Image (cartoon, rainbow, N blue to C red; front, side, top):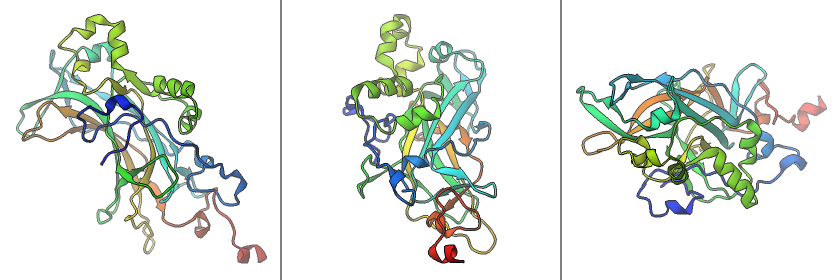
Length: 315
């Protein structure tokens, strides 16, 4: 099951697990009046851990010239983690995570990218044509015995359904919006703001074709092969949470660290006997600590949500 999209025009598109950026959420409760910061409070919005340089996993080639094309990804976490007193990036299992990501091809303009076709080589060195590109996210632990996953919550603050994290068909060339824009994107109450956010995060193929009729009629255009008209130019993953089954308490002196990866996928034309997708590149966070209890339970390395107990204050 995949997350619902705010775009009704996707209702009849045959995309069993592909949606567009869900850039509309219901208002969130302002926790400023509470003693303890709520897990979903806007006070948790802060720029999080850095990402390492793009890691390449699959060589991508341009069909027309057979030259290698190198993806470059740019990502940022805007909610869910903060720097602890001892220099660890720390998040809490119940907290929501928000992150954004874009990609380009090194030295290639948007027009040049869209006018081409691309392929990868499978394990038998056969060409596999790429239909379109997409973004996904995943998580792993430095302890291979730890099973971990991510889910996406509905916009409402309740115990409603959770969804698999989405896969967003995406085009290159977007610029990451600033942190304040991402923060505002979580709470839109009027049509004007929704329209502004859509312009920032989404690419409208129909509008682009209206302005560029030459590319519209080109069968060699990568853009022609995408499965829908509204595409992500900035992938926005919001209301992301670690799965409830995750056990994050450390045993002994060895800490378990986690890495969140944004994946740039190549979706092949024919999936019969082939993979559903190829991971072309990833944008990975530095190692992260994920805590299972409230901040006050961790006096050793405090974060902003730490509150001393009554016993501590009396000493």
